[in-house]
Image 1: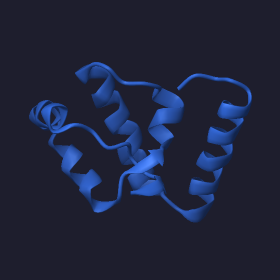
Image 2: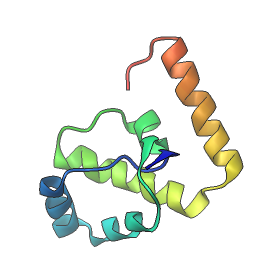
Image 3: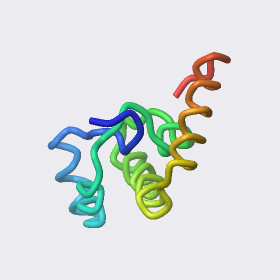
Length: 87
């Protein structure tokens, strides 16, 4: 696990997501993280539809990941925590 990367998901939901969008397998290219771009902009996911929306954010992160992008995610996460914004 790394600090920044797609949030890990339970196998039960992975199977459902893969049925609807097989691109989920691309997320296996990187380690899961404690915080993510998707968490910042999609928040907590408790339904498969929200998880599919989160997948789009995670795939965007996968295509654009860099040290600078990770730094921006880290700063935004810190600001959200410091100012009490819920995820």
